[in-house]
Amino acid sequence: MIVDDRVLREDFVPSEVVHRHDEVNLLSETLEPLLYGERPEPAFCFGPTGVGKTCIARYTLEQLRAQDPEVRVAYVNCWQEYTRFRVLYAVLEAIDRTMDVHRSTPKDELFGRLEAADDRPIVVVLDEVDQLEETAALYDLYRLGHVSLVLIANREDELFAGLDDRVRSRLRAGTRVRFERYGTDELAAILETRASNALEPDVVTDAQLRRIADAASGDARVGIGILRSAARRAQREGLGTITDSVLEAAIPDAQTAIRRKTLEGLIEHQRVLYDVIAEAGEIEPGDLYAAYERRVEEPKTRRTLRNYLTKMVHYDLIEAVGKRRGRSYRIVDEDVDRDG
DNA sequence: ATTCCACCGGAATAGCGGGATA
DNA sequence: TATCCCGCTATTCCGGTGGAAT
Image (tube, rainbow, N blue to C red; front, side, top):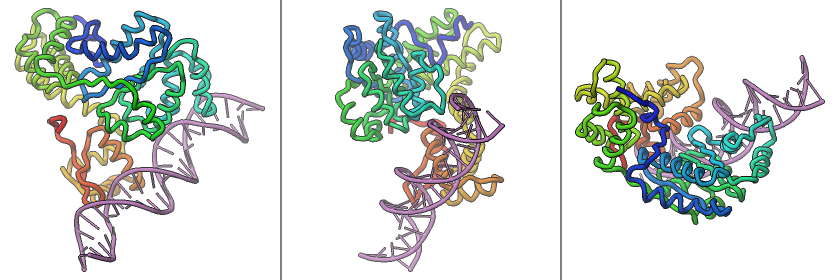
């Protein structure tokens, strides 16, 4: 049933894009100066999750490298690499200059090495750049003449709000590529091409693909996750095709899979906080801290708990309603409808 | 209207861990 | 081995704020 499961993986970059030609064109036009040995202005990809920002950035850069293999590409996800050190390290790693780099190397050494690696241009893709905590890293990279930036984020206003003035003014001139949410037809078409490459013929019907697209409400990541989960279920049960009942069972699967994954990433103390909130449904900070302190043998400081909580809000595991004194925390709903 | 105070979150600091260096 | 260096996490300190109490 499954012919090639790589096609259904999260990080798969298709050889042909569907429904995003304008975005690809705009991005590659922006980066075109690289082909003439010039430095392009920064490029931005804005849009909600699952609309193909990362995918299109990778695709476009692969195309560019096909035209000029001298160009080096460093892809950095700022969820994981959120400090200046880690970002610079990740870029050096991508261009193979991490020899002898360790935590105790002097601060400016990383920058110095990057500066020295100016024999060939580097395109640095900073994905989820709004998660970057030390925006000095942006300034560092911008200062380097042989480095070009592609910045990916959800919302333009939120991204710029988090930057300091120096960085903001320099990046203001960049090109914006905006990604709109997929409609059901568009997403069904994307799923169709994925299915035809990943699965045996006629494993899934057009009506089922539309059902998936509808359930994913425009989020390609979720849609592909449902398709993958359905195909695996069907295969496990020894079926020749994806039946409707298998498909319906796969839908909640895929939606909770991401949440389960992020929950696994939490440390023990954070999970206790999560459990307390989950059990209460909604809880005020004072009660939350007290319940946590009762449940744990060596409780962390309340300030630390606040750091945990803001992180968990970032991860979309919980939400905080209200500000300061009237605040309370609750588990974020299972079926969030996006973009209120 | 005014005061109170629970809570948030920024900034500075301490302590830990791990790799380098001598 | 002892010591230095540095990134990272947790802690300490504290100013600000807006809902609650008076």
